[in-house]
Image (cartoon, rainbow, N blue to C red; front, side, top):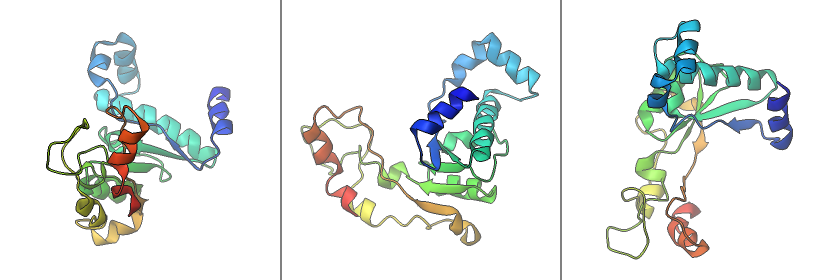
Length: 184
């Protein structure tokens, strides 16, 4: 527990982001220790192992007056989380409805509208990009409650524009890619 407390001393935010995406679950299938933990905890599969692990830290953080945040993959194991858990929904409104129906708050950051590392224009240019196209119009017109069940909309804490930097080589790359879309 002392190691975990060190992290809380460094970061004084109420929210502590644990990630939760890109966890190598296929590797866990071949890992004896992971398989033992799945068996010992009565879990069904590697998705539940991820949820079990995330639950542990969500509960720990809640006891410390903090809130765990994780990408929407943390929901894949279908295990319950403390109400203080916040889900970062990049896969869209389906994640919002799933998380909020469990009483969890959500920050909307769907790749379809708020991934600023996607190309801004459907035209050739000299910059490299990770994904598809997200125009300024798509960012500015994004409505986080659209498609959300009305009684769950109060669980939306806000939105986040994501800028993954796998294809950012210089500061000018970053500035070109996030402006003007990040000004909304």
